Image (cartoon, rainbow, N blue to C red; front, side, top):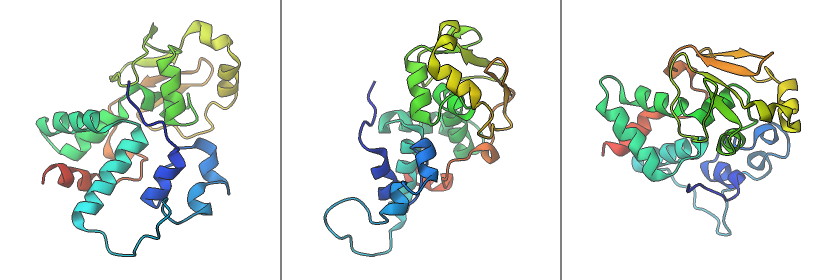
Length: 208
């Protein structure tokens, strides 16, 4: 599976804002955006106003980087959202939020989306009691996301269980701290998205 393997702090510096890709580090003085405001690269960038196309492209790139997917898959999500009746931007964010790796992160099963994706890839996460190792698996209302029985004996699970509930869980998920499971109550809505994105720019970018 293709994925970005470079330094994620560089992506935040390029965007000029925090995208919270490094878990707790983003909230400390070690955050690269706080330490080095300049965009990456040896050359000094000229200060000029971004064009409309540039603004739209930046938002699309931010969305891809936040959810950890590449261009072809992201465009497939957009095309699927555009075919649905209703607001395209809302459908797009629903599709992204319903990815299993994102749901695991939002439920507190990982410190960031990349860690949650690793748990899924390695077969630690279950859906309705069945192991699912596909990060893009799309959850539905009523699904219960949990941990494989053998994984609960691992030290990393014990650490996660101690910190269960430390991060706020969205209203569309119901967390059972005792059993470390999360149930999908409903599909996410626009107000449930915590990513710093202007979705309308993404729709405009692909509608050109």
